[in-house]
Length: 308
Image (cartoon, rainbow, N blue to C red; front, side):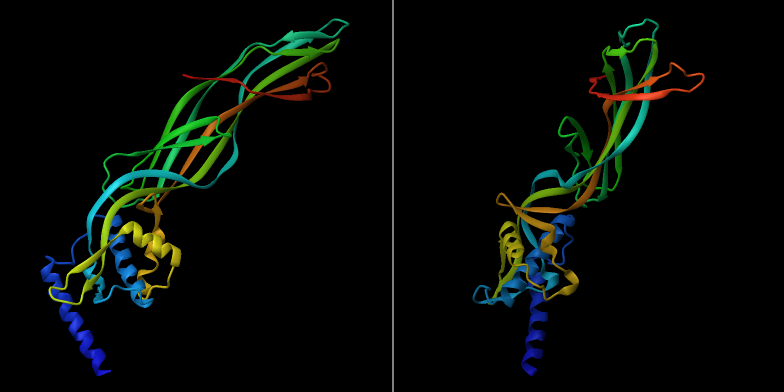
């Protein structure tokens, strides 16, 4: 027990000494990402000591001694997490046409050309910012309707907000042929159907950088650093239980990606409402005054879409 007390006292003194050697290890980290990478270094050293894989002649660092060097953001991106959820949107009236066949034989009539303007919208929402100062916004392409429609949205990694943009589209349905039986009167109503789509996204920051994880047990007690990519890859594969429970498994916010450490703790959503198809609703209104109208068919048609 006495040996443990002496060792603890010696390590506390050593922490102060090394702090003065490095210009103060209790430094203010630049942002959430580099701070998390420093945590990973501390946890990586803890893992090596618990599994007796630490370098010979070294001692573990204490939490205040965390530090990163050669830290650099290489790339920023947004990726979708999980599948896209779809729901019904609005049903919009476009126009109607009436055909009265007063002859004794079936007749084929041509409808008017149906047209409808509709503003399609997309919204990018940040629910958890990455907390890093990045001036440029990051673009993300959201594909919906089996990839037939694309919305490009912007995300700001440094703050929590929502951005909605719209683009006006014209949906055109050329003249259609409608068969009307003898002595019948038909009404053709055209409607435009819309859909809503929503998905979750995560923010990715690929970094290069090293984190302190041990130091030499010889004066001048030189700290040792390991690359973030190496540490993240090892910890994600082993997923150890950290000795410092309050810090948690910080490495789960990271993944190994193409030789770099990828931070993926930022999150958000993307949503859109867009036009899908036109539907021709055909009603028999021959006896409209006495019996009312009777729906006899619904014909879905893919319209021509033109951006305004």
